[in-house]
Amino acid sequence: MRILLVEDEVALAELVAARLKKERYVVDVFHDGEEGLYNALTGIYDLAVLDIMLPKKDGLSILREMRQTRIPTKVIMLTAKGELSDKLAGFGEGANDYVPKPFHMDELVARIHAQLRIEQVKTECLQVGNILLDYKKPAAVNADTGECIPINNKEFQLLEYFMRNPNQVLAKDLIFDRVWGMENESMSNNLEAYISFVRKKLKVLEASITIKSIRNMGYKLESTDEGIK
Image (tube, rainbow, N blue to C red; front, side, top):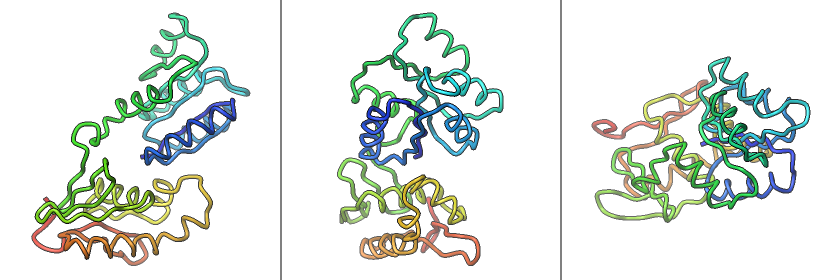
C-alpha cells in the first residue's frame, strides 16, 4: 500500500518514512503544501499523513481540496496544534484521524494500520489459491502442504499487490507506482527480475497461481488450474 507523507520537518519526515517502509509500505515524502497537494490530487494513495503547519499551503487546505475533488484517500492530520477547535476543524474538512505532536511512532503506525484496515491486523495473512502471504514472518506458504519460503521486502510488496488484484491486468507503470513509488528509477527497472524471483518461489511452492505476462499490457495473477477462489 502507498502512503503520502507531507511534513516540513525533514528529520521527522525521514524517521516516519523509514519506519513505515519497515512496515512494508511504499512512502512518498514532500516538505511543502504545494507539492503535497499536487501529489495528493493524483488519487494514487491509500492514505495521506498531512502536517497542518506547512509552507506554501497548509494541511487543512490540502485536505479541503482533496475532498472537494472527491479523492477518497484516508487522511491522518499530524500537527503540533492539539486544541479541540483545531481537531474539530480537521474532522470537519474530512480528516479520518488526528495525531498531535509529539507522538510515539508505534501509535502513529497503529493508527495507520487501523485506517487502512489491513488484513494483517486481523488475520496476519492473505490467501489466493493455495498460497498464503504471511505478514508476520514474512513468507509465502503453501496452504495445503505447509511448505514455507521466506520472501524479501520488494518481493513481498509485489506479490501482495498481485494477490490483492487477482485476474486483473496490471500495467507496468501502475506496478512501479504502487511498489516502488518515488524511489530510484533504476530499482523499478528491475521489475522483470523481481517478477522472475517471485515466479520461481511460487513454482517451488507448487502454487495454484502464477504471474502471467500480457503482451503490450503488463502482468496478471491467474490460476494454473480450476480458478482462483
